[in-house]
Image 1 (cartoon, rainbow, N blue to C red):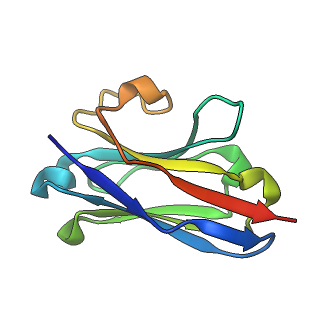
Image 2 (cartoon, rainbow, N blue to C red):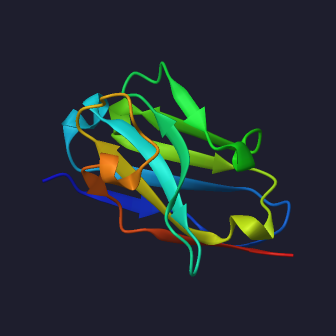
Length: 125
């Protein structure tokens, strides 16, 4: 059973930056495709960013493109989401997710096998 433990997040002002972390309990983390999702109150969980286990392919949702950056350190079993120029509409609970075997799809939450506990990001105007 893979455990994903998230850290980071908090309350910031518009224009600020934050970095979220997601630490995996298993050394096999380096073989997982990973993503970040977010869920705002009253809304469905939405895709934010994806990275393959090698880091050779990444994707970022259009609404955060140029502001958010996904990265991973396989030596530390950790995934990161660096967020710049935060906006009030970025306010949500952010989740990391792990996919054991990537079959080409990655934008649907049902594609993922394990989830972090979620961390709140609140951006004030």
